Image 1 (cartoon, helix red, strand yellow):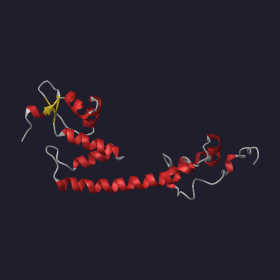
Image 2 (tube, one colour):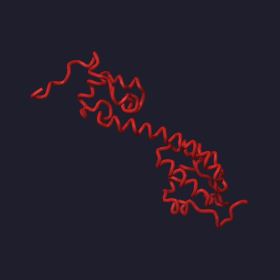
Image 3 (spheres, helix red, strand yellow):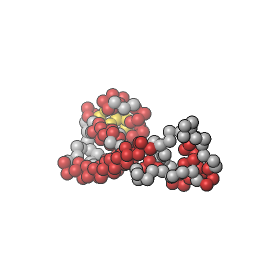
Image 4 (cartoon, helix red, strand yellow):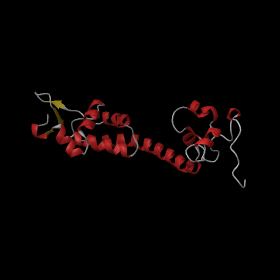
Length: 173
């Protein structure tokens, strides 16, 4: 059954109800996260069910999932009605696996916090000794030491051969 005109919201009404800016709603629509119809005057009209889809996307973002992951989950749910318990359960299993992965990454990050993000030296000048010649770039983008090294072994140990002499010892060392 097609929604009645009373069940359709303008983009302004959807923005007000969802708490998102109209630009965010247009972006979500461009990604296929939400869907609208057009009036004869080419204005967007959103079925009220899109409020549920927006809430779903915002919940996904809260637990660290990407918009692409949210879209993939939404693609498995009906567009025109509330999902059944079985449909939610199917999506929940996927989310639980991704959330468990996120938790594992957070545990690793927590364990590495005492080592700073990388080596723990808290110094941009000393970090050059631990990553001379930007060897970390070969590992790929992002905090490669933080998420790939075991907490006990830490980042590269000592300066590389191209690093040059080490820092001056602190007085009293």
